[in-house]
Image 1 (cartoon, helix red, strand yellow):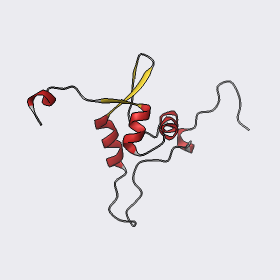
Image 2 (cartoon, one colour):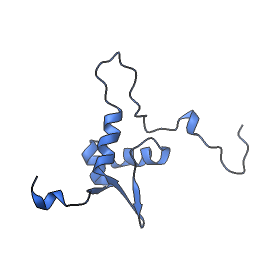
Image 3 (cartoon, one colour):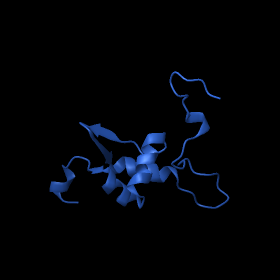
Length: 93
């Protein structure tokens, strides 16, 4: 690392760039964001950005060393029972 890159602020990626970095589709990353199962993100104005450090930390949470390991803590991009919030103003059936 040279002196110029040592002083640079953290790099932020837009959704498409972050998805490419993670080898996911942008839509999958959007779903993770919607369900709260994805990496941390920031809103800058109307733009969603991801810090590279946050993406790497999210991937690390899902690391496993064996198929007999308990499942990693990265959840799939779908609603989870513990996270479901009833629709406001309507009773559930």
